[in-house]
Every structure is written in C-alpha cells, then in structure tokens.
Length: 388
Image (cartoon, rainbow, N blue to C red; front, top):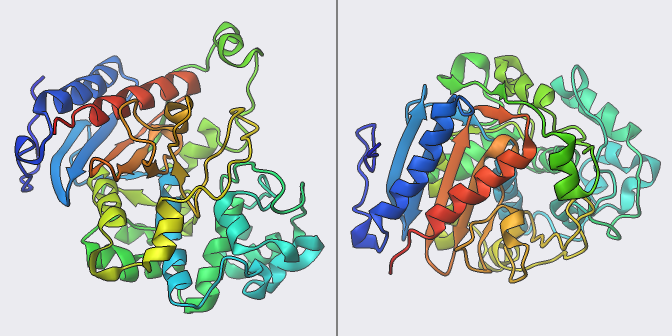
C-alpha cells in the first residue's frame, strides 16, 4: 500500500525537503495497515511533523483524517498546557497546595498535596474513584474529592494516577479561571494553534468521532509469565470496559481532564511542535522547560519496575535502557518528551530532531502486551525516518 503524505486535501510539506525519508514513513504506515487488515484496528490515523510543518497526515480503516478519536491520557498534555500557562502567569505555583483552590480536596489529610505532586503522579491517591453520576457536576466532583483518602504520603512514592490527579488539576484551573477546563483549553491552546482537540463538548458539537471498540483477546498466562513473571496482570481502572465507555457522547461530554479529550493525529503532532517551538511565547520558557525537559521525579514505577522519568506533566525518554518501554521509539533521543494514551494512542516530540508524531486508533486491544509492542514498533519506525 502506497500512502500519500495526506489523504484529505491538506497541504503537507515534502518530507525529503525536511530531512525525512518517505520510505521510513511508508514502513510506519505499512505497519499500521497490517493491523487494520487483521481487524485489530478498525480505524487509525498517523501524523508526523518536523520543524513546524506537517509532513504526513493519513488515515486507515473506516476513518478519515478529519475524524476525531478519544485520545485518553494524551489529554493530560492539554490539561497540563493550561496549568503551565497559569504557572507562568503567576496565578499558580508548583508548591501551592491544591486545596488552596479546591477546598473540598483538603479533607482527610490531603491538604499537603501540591500542584507539583499532581503533575508528577506523586500525590498518593492513584486510584481514588470518580465516575457517574458524581462526575456530572462540580458539586458531585467536590463530594468525591472530600471522600478521597491518601494511600501514601504525598511526594514519597510514584504511582500513575490514571484520572484522579487530573480531576483535581482541572478543578484548580476552573477555580482560577472561572470557566470550564475545556473552554480554557480551546481559548488558550486550540484556537491559537488551529487545533480541533476538544474536551467536554456537548454531544451536538462533537462531530464525527471514531468510537472506541474492544478488539482481541487478553494475553495468555504464558505471555504474562514471560513478561511479568506472573500469570495475571491488574489493569486497575484502565480496562477495555472502562475505555469503551467513551464511545458514548454523554461520557465524552463530561470532559474527564486526564482522559476524555478527542483529537486527530495531526492535532497531536502539531501540538507537540508547539511545545518545542513555544510560538508567540505561549508558555513561560522556564515553566516549559520544567514540563518538557526536566526530570522532576525518577522514583520507581511500581508497575514497570524502573524510574518513572516524570517532568511537570509529561514523560521524558531518558538515557537508560527502558526508554522504549516508556512509549518512545527506539530511534528517539533521550530528550524526547510526550504522553501516550490508553488503547495505543501515541504523542511525543524529539527536540534533537525536531520531529513529532501523533497516532490514534479506535481499537482497544484486550492484549496489552501486543498493544505495547505495536506502540514501540510504530514509534520506532517514525523516529528512524529522520535522514538528516
């Protein structure tokens, strides 16, 4: 299959003029097409940009390049983008207790949790629950915040908070700005950058969405033992059943700050170009450095068994042997930063090469090991496409 640089009439730069090998991009596209052909990925998009220009924007399966996908934890980079602006504006500080802005959150000893703890997943309440019907209103969310209890002392342990920490970050931003987080993201990030990313949009405004669909079978006990040394693996709250809830327009309308965004692959690739270039001083340079270049937390990740490499809101590839397991391509530099999403969504940028990528899919693979291999393979092929 020969994949054009764009299949929706968008203007795309010539890859070779920007030092990117079209054959390398083709290998990434072929890898995705093979997954579509097997039925594992009903729909997908791939976008690649370099030096501020989009050079690849293609779709696979049932999607077009303008359909949006649920990008799950890739959303965290957009929620983070608003928080970083507030930090740069002096309206917020990393060592501020979150309860200063969201008083209900301070109950049950959580008043020591800071903005930095929330951004680095060291707040100590990784699996605090919040779902329907409480997530439908600020009153309900505050009720949940007040109930939550700490599992560990803030700042002492890293454990990924799939949604809980960003629920609080979203509430902090809303308290400061006096508007819904999704509106703030749209006004402060998406409109200036020309992105179609959306969070918390009402059903009638959502437009075409490639709804997530569960595919495949869970890994076998033998597969799990080979990787983890055990025949079971706890996915926590990130299960196919939970992820496919976002096929419902009403769930997407909630605007889950750490998981509920919808975007195209091109939105992701272009947003990460902005995080490298900081157009028109969108963010304070020092805050942006803390978000995209500085490892603030290298405590061990209990799920993976190695350093978490967390910045103020993102993941840094690092120079150890585990950077591909953090979701980056084998050809990425140690300075690569990004944040992938459940279901195999990919978003990162490499400051050393100027390359960024976005990959989105509607196929929620029940085999998380196969999904991880797919992520590394696609990301590696994109990273290796840089020729100069």
